[in-house]
Length: 602
Ligand SMILES: Nc1ncnc2c1ncn2[C@@H]1O[C@H](COP(=O)(O)OP(=O)(O)OP(=O)(O)O)[C@@H](O)[C@H]1O
Image 1 (cartoon, rainbow, N blue to C red):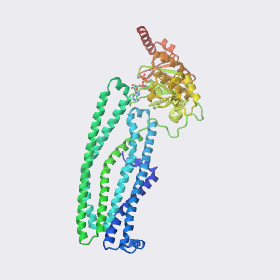
Image 2: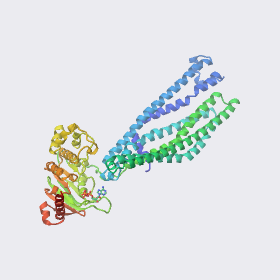
Image 3: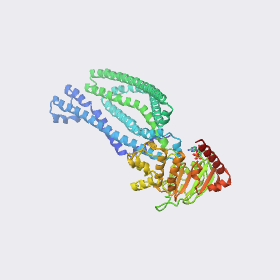
Image 4: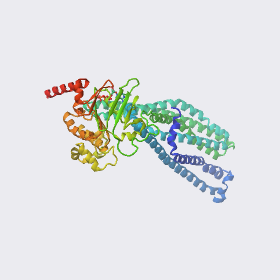
């Protein structure tokens, strides 16, 4: 992924004012740090020693008085002011930096979240949702880490190094060069320790990632874990991974400690060399004591930026890895893309007629392996079309082409006579309501779940939809009625109750086209019977595509489409298909004989 950092910088650009302010504070702080040892130098050289004040500071004498000793007070005061100012600016820089950095992280997270919501179901089918959540919540912070944890410290270090070296050079050329002698040694240490530090930190992150994945997998599959008594096994796996993570963490810390000891040793040798040679120069009078003190003070601050630069490589590697994971999603190919200049399905507000037509549609998930072949099917407004066929024949795939979850390889899908690839996706999906086998419910209140597709629906409309869906009576029995918050995926409700909420949601949406994908198959025959009444109310006056394995559910459809090996094998009414004695007849016979055996055994 070339120039990834440049692409990421686009997201940072929006916050350029904040970034510029942080840079300004950084420059002010560098200036204050450079000035810090100068009051001490002036005291040592001009008050305790016999040097005169530099011409640029003669005004101090007119302010404090002529006697050298009178300079002590203002110089001590200047030290306090410099320290306070530097600390104040540093704290402000940290505060503003944290704010701007986090804001950039949230901006990137929001862009990622938006993108994920618009990527096709095909993309999501191939991903683990836990991993995607990590990308949005954790990896998007990489932009903050790169800006505030890598870019800013590196820039600060470089500016610090340059400014201090320039000042040192003015004081003494030889000592300036000597202070840089440690640089190659620090580079050598970086070269030796960088790889183990990065590798061990990466291993640590990997194990932490595995712990998170295990936690997420186990908690989402908790009913299975408990049913199969695997709690102890999962505990053991958790402990094993934690142990591994701990070992990797300690190994990474060990490498960092060795590196730090190396840097401290080299720094100590450098400082000692400056003391030694600087001491000789002071003794032979070519350097003042104050200048030597400035050198030693700078030296301490000079090695800090070098060390910072050394550490940055591991921070950079971690942030770069996260950035790649973020860009992978941002760059993911959109399988279903709205064409430029797509128009709304309806040019005026209102409802579509509900005419749906599939024209010679061929589609599959893998190249060369079509699931649906050359399917043509027309549904007139208000007509009910049932889809039947063996499991895996492509019934759900066929109906998923209508809301354009996928685009056909060949052929086209028309909605109210318009090719759905030419219209705005949202305007198309507004005209379709879905009730699936798994009624996806959110951990919100019952009322909010019913009104999910219909923002701003009145309480009366919600209750009317629930009544029509035969859901009102069970909702009234809940502790807070319509304001009861249901568990994740409706965990606190029975299958039939969840399905009735899904029907109420579809009723409230009041779309002209309805897709019912095995809405009753997870229920027993008695509950199914109760639901059918609600479903009939829902289907009235709408173009409906219904998929059901139980043929009893589809008997009253206007037309039944029988799919076989990806093609339409038969179309007709229940009676006509029975008379034809084809595949439908055989499916019907099998189900009828099973029902007889079942009723006899009961
Ligand atoms: N997202 C996907 N990626 C790849 N293959 C898929 C995907 N979804 C479904 N399939 C495959 O496509 C085929 C048709 O699946 P589909 O769900 O449409 O069948 P179905 O007739 O609705 O089956 P069932 O009656 O069991 O629900 C199956 O072989 C299935 O494994």
